Image 1 (cartoon, one colour):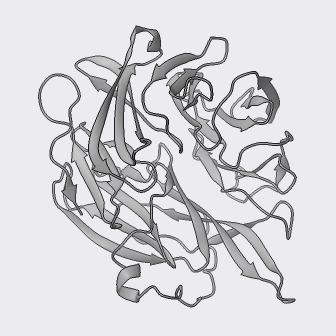
Image 2 (cartoon, rainbow, N blue to C red):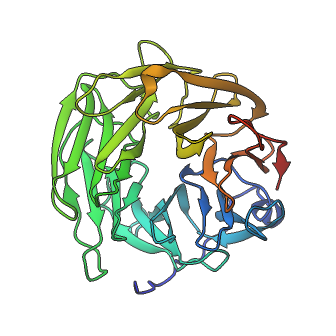
Length: 367
């Protein structure tokens, strides 16, 4: 069991935002898998707000009722990223701004864990800054099959930095994975074979780093002449040892999917300005990938196609719900696809897969 770190020092509430607003309304959508399924079959939704984060939890597996919001303090923490491992633990990453003793502004990466659905988070632990005093991109991460947390961030010099847990539960030192000119939002994925891969858009194309063996060093970066719009990369494991990467293609303006060793597939759809939400699910007995994004008009968009079978077609459905940031996807305790978004008023909404053939969503419920 990982040791609980010391908590952060309290900070004042953001100016102009009341305690009631902090504890009720989201300020936008988190990054990563911010709609998670617990071991008990209940879904939990997480969203950032001033001075911390908000949490809503299903009262029973499959819903439809939810409890919350529950306010979790995280003074000074911004750029919330949520990830979950195969063990069900939910991990939270953020970037924290602090004033040094000399008054200079500094940043560090922080991490917290929720071990069980509905329980409290651990205290926030600082993972430091690979370039003390330097700027940081938004931290992203992946949890390997053995539970090892990997945290990636664009460093002050424009390359990719990694900090990960050691087998004894302590954290290793920051590792410089090199690269230059990368986008602030890399996409990391944990594969079924135990390895982790990470992809980043750069000025020269896409850069890929891969582990040769689980827990091993990262090889790369290996460059590919593919043009991804900044801030749109996402990744999903689509085979035992294979990842599929998704992005908004600069040339076509629609979504693209690609695996190492193949050619990119153009999926069409509305161009996303943020990373796609990706979920692997069985629909009508077929292994499918479900994608969701915020379209150009601010409304949510849902797409679906066969896993690693994009050339047979990808279908997109424009929804009428507006959202802040990107939506999230998960399967609930009954196996149904659930989509979540943050409405323009800071209130989360969820819709579940209807019974019947195909993939259609039922009525939206505000939490």
